[in-house]
Length: 240
Image 1 (cartoon, rainbow, N blue to C red):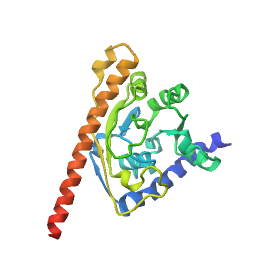
Image 2 (cartoon, rainbow, N blue to C red):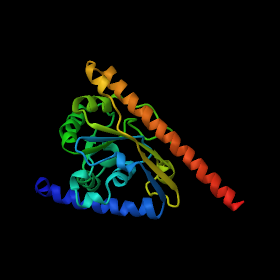
Image 3 (cartoon, rainbow, N blue to C red):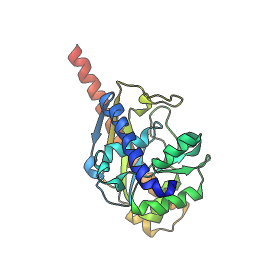
């Protein structure tokens, strides 16, 4: 019965959830979205982002596609999700499945999850966090080759995404989001990796692909940090 009703329940549960998070991100916190036009609506689109909180996948998908996802449910992204965070109890597992999460076992070297990603990505959109873990200080860490293997296998349109401010909204160890914070999301131009497709499909090539994407994310993240400093300085100057 769950599999029969899943397309409907997933559509309803996900869009209702992101509508609630729209209030969190855009009403109770000041969220700025930059470069949304770079995302497009093509299938086989992979949004690769730095990782700061457990809510990042909602933020990326919402910033990229909401409210269009109400009319075009195929734009609701797939989201690989850590089993220890999203599959801890039956209710959360049911929600995760309806949020189009792909179960990834603890330890992360999960070939079954990678195979599932390779199956679904060409038919839709996916959000993925190449660092594999959340940052404790907001800095962008190194990417892991698993995302590069996915890219080599599916050859998607790869959009680099930078997030800044989510570590203050929902830091590691906290379960309720804070309010009145500043959040920024930047969608960059698609990354060109065609030259790497001619190389052998090895772990080294996969790492080279993901290193190129992470370099783009770092540039975008640095610009978000500069923007934040300018905004803070402008507010301080106005108060002074």
